Image (cartoon, rainbow, N blue to C red; front, side, top):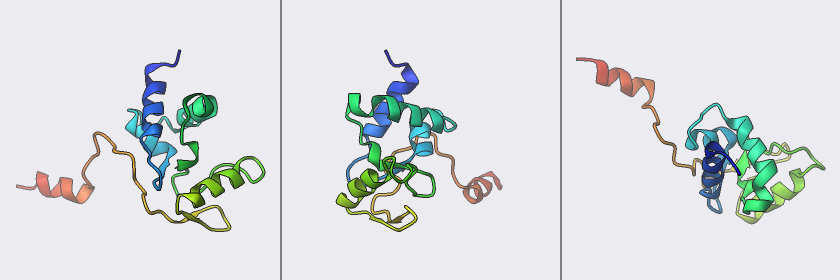
Length: 120
């Protein structure tokens, strides 16, 4: 049986709707551990088929496909293109119509805003 963090990762991945993507780090943060990106990869490898996860919507932080060519790259690219994304030759999403689709909890305000609040 999957642990609590794994279940939260699965729920976060399932929340990424068609036409949207999220990074491994965004999923980890949404699940409660901003440093858990590697665990997100493990969950995707283990549970994608069992849980029907939209694995193709999870990409690297910079918006690139992480899978190698000949090892899933082409399949992920095709699935993303079917949802309206444009992928360049390097595997980078050229347009991200739904970037930032996962709602992150406990997001900190940008530094400039924090400083203004702290000033008298």
